[in-house]
Image (cartoon, rainbow, N blue to C red):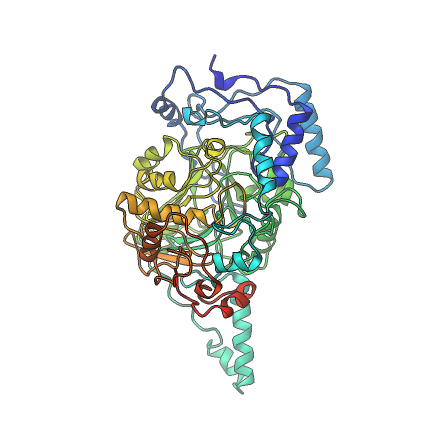
Amino acid sequence: MNPLLRTPTRPSLLRLWAATQSHIMNGRLGAATGTMSAAPPSSSSPAAAADQRRGAATATPSSPSPPPPEPTPTPPTAPPSHHLPPPAPSIRLALASAATGLLARCGVAAAAAGAAPRFTNPWPSWRGGDKTLAEVVPFLRAMRERAPDGALEGVPFPTQDDYRRAFPLVEPDLTGFPPAHDQQQQQQQQQQQQQRAAGADATTTNNNNTTNTPPPPPPPPADVRAVWLGHASVLARLNGLTFLTDPALSARCSPLPFAGPRRVVPPALTPGTLPHVDAVLLSHNHYDHLDLATVRALHARFGPGGPACCPKRGPLRWFVPLGLKAWFAAALGEGVRPWVTELDWWQEAPAVTAPRRRQPQHAPSSSPASIQQQTRVVLVPAQHWSSRGAFDRRATLWGGFCVVGPEARFYFAGDTAYCPAFREIGERLGPFDLAAIPTGAYEPRDFMRAQHVGPEEAVDIHEEVRARASVAVHCCTWCLTLEPLDEPPRRLARELARRGLRPDAFVTLRHGAGVRVVGGRFAEAPLTLPVVATAGVAERGSGAAAQAAAAQASPSPPLPSSDARAAGGAPVAAAAAAAQASPAAGRVM
């Protein structure tokens, strides 16, 4: 019998306590209630396991009608190797079901899945991924001994000013992102008020249709634009559509609003200030990627009947891995189900619904509407796990996303460790104009290797998926593990220099900074996080080249004095004071 398919052991009170403590401490490293460290398959290689998963078919929509039809994928001929058989009825499953129902009555959205794992990672690199109590407790003890919000290199107990200087927040440049519907109406009202104040004849103005300033021309579809909002949240624009990845914009990533990791950098945008968003790509259900408050705020604004719901494109769509539609129905109501699309690995769905009226047959295939309709969203494998409580470990699927269109391609790795799947992703769906790859939360390495990549492995992913340009995510925002929060950008720059890659091939952006990719290269020098060469040395300019030079000069430099740190462009209100205090605003170390 395949050892990956063993029945999970019954949880003990000690393991339940470790699960609760781990979710409160870091919102992610949860319950040691599942199976113990699983052994790799004895009779199948990673290549054979990948061949088994090729049976996942493409999701095809039914006839268009409001609300949009859900994709109806053809079931694979054989169960994919990352699926586990359904568990037998047990007292554990009954208790988990009762707890889920009680939480739902109390207004708490919980996973509706059973207690037993439904999915697994089919690669030998997952060995040791399920942690025992003896492994979890020392990690939690080490986390408690660190600074509450995380250390910086050379500053073991930073202040809020230290965080602001280390991670300057910049005002997002939303050029090329169309405004939301409510923002357009607000702009029109402001223009009308300005014209009335200037003494213009309102009636004549309305009759001549000059009240509304024509919107700026859309960017070329081949351009890929992205803004990093913090952690794994990226606002990406390609093929005439806007996507938001892993929206977690709250102050904490925890099941409790008063405990757990606290954000050291405010989000660059909030659900109320986002531009128009067509779809959300959700990689898995950990609290630092799936935030209930953010999801409800997005649904209230962009969902059916919301003030920002576009009349032409319809409500916001959610693309999620298998098993998460029930969570959205519990959190947002049953009416959200038509707008939530569940996908299995290698399964795809159209990024937008088909238009209600058929376009003329002579419409060019390169028209904006045609490019949007040809864009598809594909869920691809990742080595990780899922859990939001003590009884739902690996009950829902996880993965990354590829947005594939006729003009541009975007890859979002989600949360992952290194595994053999990335080369296959690059061969089947690459090359990608832009990739968002995690680089943080990797120490202690022996503990985190099976679930998170470090900067060096992130460069491996960048090369194997054939990304022309990449930006780092999953770093510099929440203290989830033991490494200093500002260490990943330095290690990433050193690894690029060691391999002889371009310094701007893979960059760590400042919070709120953006990039525009044309032809696989950044059209402008990206505004990256500071990387200091030595203590007390002034900034070396801006851009990825300065970042690489500073990384080569010192492997572990301390933070400089306050007058040598960058404040970061045009800061938002939360970082305005720190920006004004620094004379080096707008430059990168």
